[in-house]
Length: 181
Image (cartoon, rainbow, N blue to C red; front, side, top):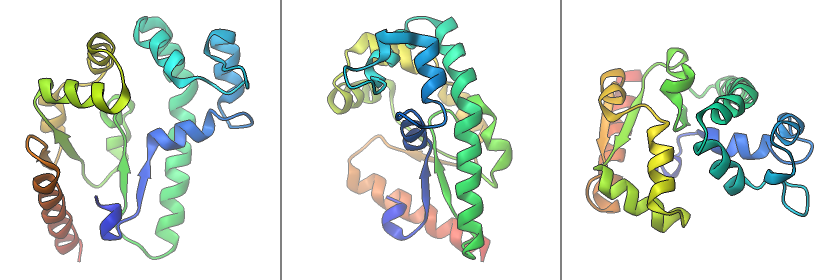
């Protein structure tokens, strides 16, 4: 939604996807660590298989995080630097694990989007085609809403329809832009 307003957005999950492609900065390490079980026939990393593996085993999840987080953060920082060089003074980093990685310490502010757990589960099942158990396993690996809200400067409640969320996101973007001017 903020990208649609002309605000540069860096999607950390997309950065990770790019880095996991053959030849990417973390591909070889992930393939070596988790082996053929996470490789598709074309030798790309099957993110669904990798997710099933690591969210079922906290040890494996920690190993994956150790291989990926620093590289993803380096690339996010590089992209932020590139944006700053254009004279832009506002950018958004979209990441599910900002607090878990400590990335929030490098940000001017944190805005979180929250929704009731049952809504998040239903949305993830529809959006990602996962079953409820898989969704809950991924959610349990993340910081809870209370900590997110405490650490944030703004909370967007995503408990209604997209039109309502779009209005809330727009209002917050305008507020941030005004305070930065």
